[in-house]
Figure (cartoon, rainbow, N blue to C red):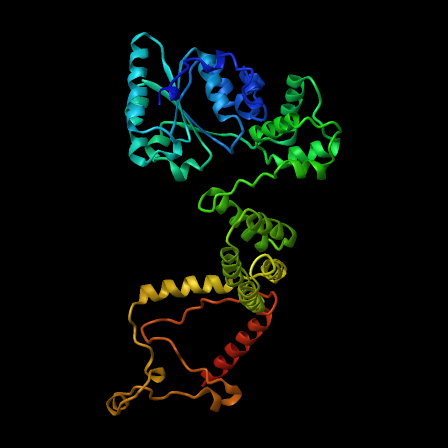
Length: 438
């Protein structure tokens, strides 16, 4: 574990000649950090803190390979702080105690300590609480790094003492800067055509470290002629998209799929469906969400939407992957292009609310069952009008408890099939009013 705490000033260390290319190209100043100008620039939160010479505790939240560790290392040197780094993957309570003890000793010499905690979300709640007294007393300035949403993974008490700074995935411009630096370091261009270079940048999925590792693989392969995209793809394995099935990426994409279908955008809907399935999401999970959508956002505006979803489930279970995924795509497209209505969803919520509020009110006597002689004598079922015997097949009887005024939960829209439902309900309302008149 000693190596976890080695190196007080990592930004001043000489990089080994045999170190990976990504390490050799690690920025030496904050100005060299790419893609995070909103934080490290003159008007960014980090830029302002460095200019003032005062750092506050912070959580750096962003995708892999976007510079979280590099920024933490450079921050310490920028303001003359003692740097200590630990990883939540390898460290426990004993390591934390050692780090805090060393910070206490440094404080006695008049030097503050920046404690960098990589993968801070991997510490449990009790371990996270252990940071609080040392942060509050100023023994350490905490800089945590995480790829997970801090609001889900970190204690509220810790978040209240640290500013959350969001790092962006690196765009094509920033990634191309990294490739330019790699070419300058190696003294020769990458063995790629222009199209292959663009494909390489796209394959990195915003991860600078991954991109540089791929570039190093290309250099080490001693390629004589520039590769086309196809040949490059054969040589380099494609990057698996960043996607955790039980974390924020999962919820972001399912939310994007739902809202794209709700917004009647079949192209975007299909894109987010593909994002999830390509990343390895369980197909039946996605189909369950689409089926829920069919009831929540389409309902009776197009009753066939639910039928399509259930048919897709049967088709997928019959065919399996990948053939059955086409049925899921069909259900997705049907829902995205269907007429929309949340009237049934709103009606359900309102009815459930009334049911909880009214408790056990007795239905009116005319519509309750009378299976025994005594119940008939008590008036159960008395006065029931059999609708099929009434004119027009509609009796217009009262079906509400006597202690309760009739409610209106379901108000259909004028879209799709619900337009016909609206007409029917209006017709029944007119008939009921006519029969109630003396």
